[in-house]
Image (tube, rainbow, N blue to C red; front, side, top):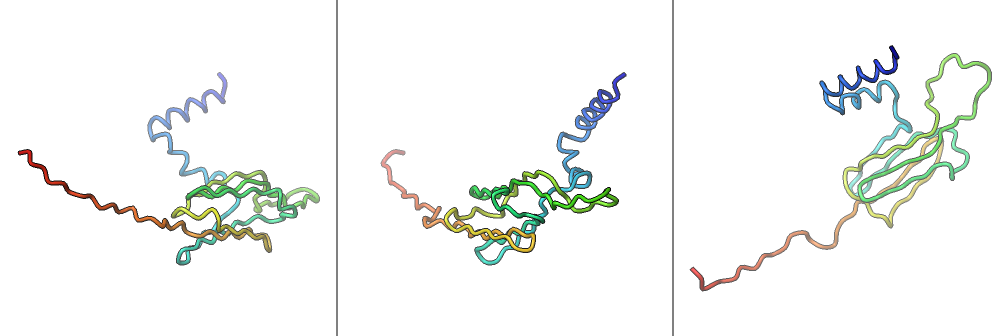
Amino acid sequence: MDPFKQMSDWRKNMDHFFGENFWNEFENIIKPTIPQINIYQQDHELICVASIPGLTDLNKIDIYVDHATLELKGDIDIGYAVGTVVKEEILQGVFERTITLPYPVRRDKINATYQNGLVIIHLHRLISDESSRNKVNIRLTDET
């Protein structure tokens, strides 16, 4: 019998028993996400700090912002491969990461810089000029 088929069947049974999102809880333990990101909130501003070591060409990373979503795509390559790896803790490789922001942000006020292996993204809260509260007029009718 094919061992990979057995493993696939085992995982389907686990998904059926625990729910389809069961494995998502373990994904970061098995394979940590890259890049690592910190998000700080200050008044109406978000500061997102992403750890991307070894970036020499800024065109090798794409940053997209859409309403309340931040998306990062790129490749982490520290460019150091001498000899045989004995221990490897610095995560490398192609990444695609989507982060849900705590609130919608403005499209016209986004700033990103790179310094000392960190991409720092400044985002500003989208504050609507219009109030979402609408006055409802009551009309008197003669019908009973």
